[in-house]
Image (cartoon, rainbow, N blue to C red; front, side, top):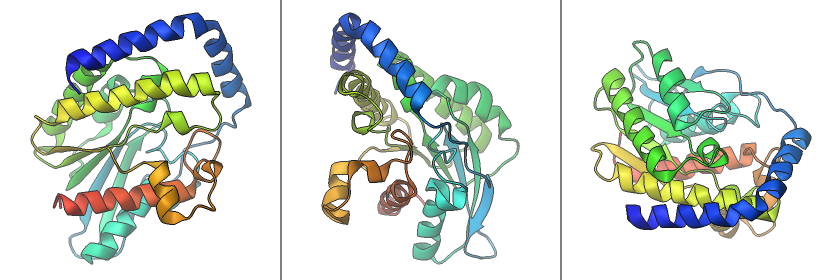
Amino acid sequence: MNRTLIAARYALGVLLAIPLSPFLYFQGRRVKKTMPKLPGATGNEGAAGESERPLRLLVLGESTMAGVGVDTHENGFTGALARYLSERLTTGVSWKVFAESGHTAKTALERLVPLIQGAQADLVIVGLGANDAFTVNRPERWGRQVVALIAALREKLGGVPIVFLSVPPIREFPAFSRPLRFIVGNLAVLLSKELDRRVVNQPGVYHASKCLVLQEWFKIHGAHLKRSDFFSDGVHPSELTYRIWAETTGAFILEKNLI
């Protein structure tokens, strides 16, 4: 999808949201008030498997990368990805997580990247997009912020492969009303399209955009599952979601020969 079409769809979405803005505001307040406040996972550094020279994984992002919804990173996305890669590559995989709830592409650049002090990595995973959708960030501006984030990571870590994860599927969030899922969820889709457009010309940068598709997971993992099984609180992933998401992302990484 080209820049003009993305911008036009964003503008249309904003126009559709204007008459609904009072309703969406109170819906948002209700969700924030009723949703349990889950902490991030513990264990920002860890490892899976053993070897003399483990594969070094650096994870950066918002609440999903902070492991909100599970108790430790062992049970979240990072631990599951490390185990998947360790088992298939028969090597140790160590990880460091730089993530916190609420971050956007802009604040991740400003507050998380400076925390990376001398940390070396063989692979960088970036999970962002939900908060940029919640704050109605314009796709064009989001794209520029993503490019700036990539440049900052390159300055810190050199030419290491960078994988951007799927923008969270807000249209599937059980805690949101249908109008809220429609408006904010469609914006998340546009941010994903913009991310595709931006990374295609960035050497060594990839977008694992098809690794978090719940409808596909229903087909693969059983029709007995409910949408709520994939969420810990109606918004954040469950342990099941983190595991399947990590495994599909790990398969993407191996398919692309990134490590």
